[in-house]
Length: 287
Image (cartoon, rainbow, N blue to C red; front, side, top):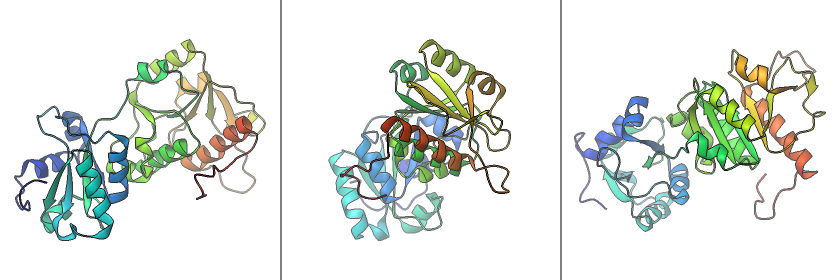
């Protein structure tokens, strides 16, 4: 633990945390913020929050609201940080609150190194199921897509160019820790992704209202890449021309489904077909 409570906005950790609230700052430092005790714990458990130098020479740290330092919900997190050799930095309450994006911060945030995988390495590892976000711009939707991909046991996730920054604070929070459970590539050019998938023999399927195949009648073959398009414009032309399009039927008066809702419907249908039925593991009783 660093010496004393930090009360100066000029403290190096405070300055770094502030810089990481913007995409240019995250890109420059090769790191991002994880806010909240639960998400911070997932980051520490994943092994990404290690005490390694950033490009600026800083090391990673766990910043804690000094007024909540002894709170029961933070005790386990702080012990986890210590065991991971991550520096614990108590920060004065008002200064800590100024670093947080949420109105009700949970008393802790972790600075985490860049966790993305190069696209070539990700596809080269031949994951069985890849989920692709094609220019998805809403942070809540992208975070939920990550969570759903994790929930169905996908191996990898790709966010194409035009998608919201995967390290955006709202994306990180909406993923509920799933960001740390998947191999992820970001800012990938669609043409490059398509080329690599085709060379590797992937089936490419996309959800689209114009699809001629109903999603529950189509038979999905592994290895498989499943693409979900932009909230307003839908799939980009390159994906629409390449993928086999499947349609989720709507029997009511709604014109469409939210992209993350559509992802849940389609991905669980794929897993239902592959497994024969959805089985909740005995080790995961919460449904």
